[in-house]
Amino acid sequence: MAEELLYEGKAKRIYASERADQVVMEFKDDATALNGQKRATIEEKGIINRAFTVRLFRYLESERIPTHLLAEIDERRLLVRRLTMIGLEVVVRNRVAGSLATRTGLAEGTVLDRPVVEFYLKDDALGDPLLNDDHIRVLGMADEETVLRMRQMALRINRLLEEFFAARALILVDFKLEFGRTPTQEDGGVVLADEITPDTCRLWDRTTFEKFDKDRFRRDLGGVIEGYREAWKRVQQ
Ligand code: ADP
Ligand code: UDP
Image (tube, rainbow, N blue to C red; front, side, top):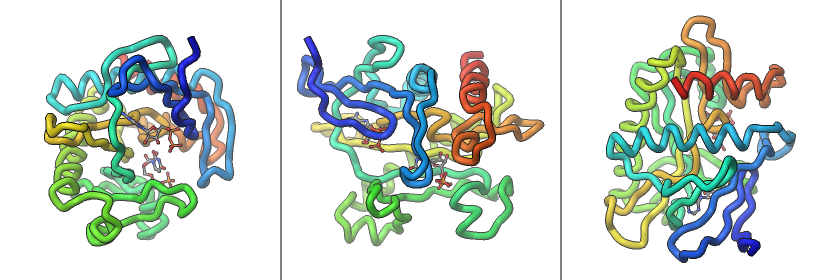
């Protein structure tokens, strides 16, 4: 029986499942950058990204971070809790890169004294603009308590992931998270959703600073899937 497609995004598809409170998340090989202007199919990416997300979400769950992950279905699909998504992208940065380098003029790779948390509006038509706390309130995206909770969870996840990647000779430069709400108030009502993958993280080799992430695609550095494979190989250690 064909499952009902509920949503098709840039990198994943969401299908209905047998239960109303669960959905199936399928990881595609499609990649986009520069706000959708750059597109490609990177064979095998979806398989690596699904496996990567499972590895990291299971680790975070073991450290008592609530996530949407329920079960693995096959090499491209996961069963996850169906959440009401909070339409924000939460970025945590340990070093300067990407848009922070552009916005501040600081050199890429500069170590930040303390992690920086940023909120972006998840809206492709607007180019995912950076928001401050007042913007979030005025737009009615989330109340103060929810913003605080996302910030605290993002910082805790950052500490856990930094340590996890450091043990595998990788620097976690920055990453993006998405959160959703559960229908009930279990888990404090806010749950980590979506994915954590080389699409959504910057990961550099500890000594050579070689990039094993989507910047290989964004910047035409070559060896995109080889970079993803190397990151996945280390994450399995
Ligand atoms: P985009 O929408 O940015 O193109 P994707 O291709 O990754 O992104 O599509 C996945 C979509 O599923 C995103 O819109 C994301 O917010 C949403 N999503 C992630 N986790 C869940 C969940 N547990 N329940 C419902 N929607 C989710
Ligand atoms: N990121 C993401 N999705 C987005 C925007 C950013 O996963 O829509 C991730 C990106 O991979 C990086 C971090 O968030 O790890 C910070 O991205 P940045 O703001 O520097 O944007 P970029 O210049 O990469 O578009």
